[in-house]
Length: 339
Ligand code: DAH
Image (cartoon, rainbow, N blue to C red):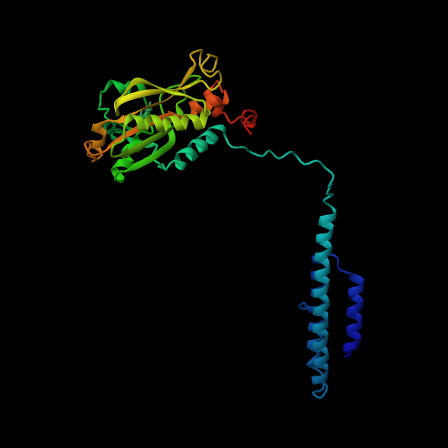
């Protein structure tokens, strides 16, 4: 038996087969190392050799096994490298092709207004308080001095989940939750979504409000006026005036409706202010004694003012949007107008 001879044959076989795929390589490996393979045959023939030749021939066979295994490993690497190169080359990358334009989003006008107002109030020492959208009748109505069957409930017809649980109709519920949780002095805004059974071009079943509440000793209606005057000037411009009109809310006494002078015509009368020179922007008042009592605050020691505004309405006024639905439709052409 001549191991050298067999080695020469094996190398020739590699040349002949020249494996190009995993399958070719598997065939080659079987030819060398399989049950009836060359090396197995060599090992079998080792048995019949005279004992003195066995160590050397055994070593030669083993060297050959190592050599052939190394060659197979190299061939395997080549096969995989070539397969990857072919896959890349067959993809026909065209680097000159135009990519589709990637639309970059923008801040929704409503969010922009909410952030702007939040920044203003936070800059004036208010905290931002988050209150639940799903509320109990108590927080949304009763604690705010709106008992069951009170006629003021009609203005805020809402979505009841059961007799006691509803989607909040106003962020005023946040006032109660805050006052129950923290001791005065308090200064907070509570922005958020509210829900009512309303639907036309200026009303949507879902809209946004921002509540404000200040509780301290010796707070007066003048403080309310000062706070809202600063706010109105910040939002609508330095020349803006505000006026209070008497109104009614069960949770404030006295209550006022607040108008700002028209930022568009400065009081002369135009389309924005419906020729009145004034734009109504929010409701406000001095916190009703009963509301303070409901929250365990002594109304003889502490007073407060509250205000609540519709963020959608303020956004519509500022951005000259005439249909509230536009803010919900997610039409990118509309959103791009406010980039
Ligand atoms: N919650 C009232 C509404 O939704 C708005 C409001 C009015 C809030 C007067 C107040 C307030 O805090 O004092 O119509």
